[in-house]
Image 1 (cartoon, helix red, strand yellow):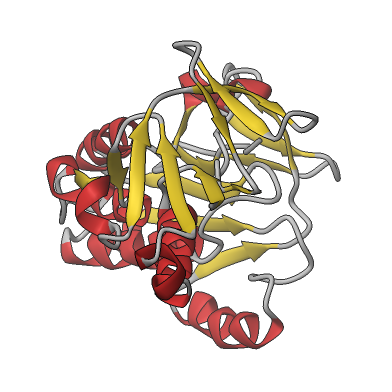
Image 2: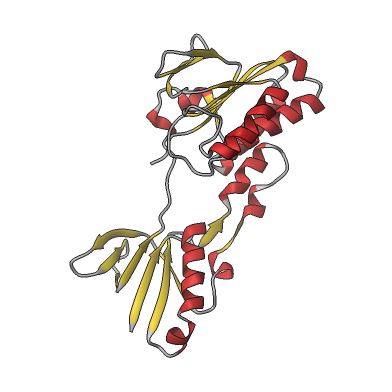
Length: 252
C-alpha cells in the first residue's frame, strides 16, 4: 500500500488531502493507497477570520471546528506532534515515540509569527494574526479617540497579503461611522514600491487610498520601534509617529 502523509491540518493540508482523496478514490477503496493527515491539535482554525474579530464582527469560537469534519471520509486523521522527519527511513516520528512510514510526504506546516524579532513590537504594536491579538486590537480601537494610526507590514513574506489593506479600509470606515475620521491621520506602509504585490491590485487600491485620505508610504521596511518617542522607523531612514500602531508581525 502506498501511503501519502500530510503534516498539518490547516487550509493547505486539508485541501491537499481532499484533492488527493478525490483523485485516488479507487486506489483508496481498494486498499492500495492511504492519505493520512497528521495534525497537532485536530482542530481547524480559519485564520483569515481573525481580522473580523478585530473589527468587531466575529468571535473566535466561530472560527474553529474539528479537522475531521472538513476531511473527506477517505482521509485518515492522526492527532499528534511530529518532532522529526527521517528521510533515510522514510518515516516521521511523533512526540509519543510513534513512527509513521510514508511513500510520499507533504509538508503543510504553514508559518508562525515572531513579533519578538522586532524589539518593543509586543509592547507597542497591535496585530490581527492570532485570535488573542485581534481581541486586543479591538480593545485598542474602542479606546481610540483620535490621533495618528500607522498600519504597516513588519516582514516579508506574510500570510494573507490583502489583509493589511483590508484592515486599513475597514478602520477608515469605522472612524467615519464613529465621527472620528476628521481627527485622525491614517498612514499605510508598504515594504515594496507599490501598495500591493500584484500590480493590477495595486493599481486598483492606490486611488482608493488617495480617495480615503490614507497616506501611502512605499519602501517602508520596518527596522525598529521607539517606544519613548512613539515612532516606527524604516530601514530606509523614514520615521512615522503613531498613537496607534498596527503591524503585520514577521513570519517564519
